[in-house]
Image (cartoon, rainbow, N blue to C red; front, side):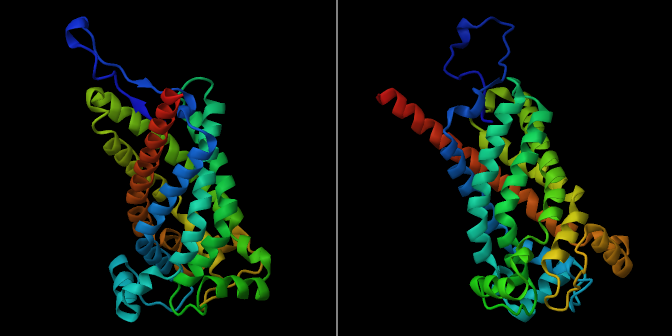
Length: 324
């Protein structure tokens, strides 16, 4: 995905007067090994989720508001309630579970994305359909890895959570509800993340390309800004579009805990009907603001970190090639 402008070491006096630098895309797959994509993705995902975890906690509290005995209704009120009753540490409950899940899940996420993007693009690096399709395949694979720890994380994030920590939550859920409870929201998560990822990757690649076309001569100097800006735009748009399904996912993962409703069928339609009955249609948009506030900077952090790690591996590979 890394792109480069016309090399800056070219002599301007040797170029024709009507020459305009054009963007050239680096070779497919960026010359990296599969394991290098996995490491770059793992680092990016871990940094992203650890940095933005407090915002995710506020979002979770707001999304279970219709079922749990929490009085906060807005972003400011929810944040104030957590700080008042639990202190700053309350914003980081469950971060251990996310730390265990984010690295492996994002390693799968980005490596599958890069592999599928190369396979689907047909030699065209600017194919938005290929980017979207690759994103969908990537999220199906990564969600299978992340969903269990995401469920544990969300239960620990709840106010008055009955669990002492990650291992206590894993043990009690497995004993009391069975292994299937860890994947109760997997179908919803995939249905949410498939359009989320399709919108996210297509938007990211399009915005990145557009920014590079605006100022191709400064791409090398400002590449991290380009990735961060494109990532922020993609994250915010995708988050806004998929908030209703994220609310459903949270309800399924937290059912039966802290007074949250338990759904007999566990179907997405059943959860939708329950939310609408109790909170109206606005209940489907609970937490949209912290969700956007999470995903915009999180995507900026993730993409810029990911591209920086890729650049490191590219230089490493080039140095190894020249040394041999």
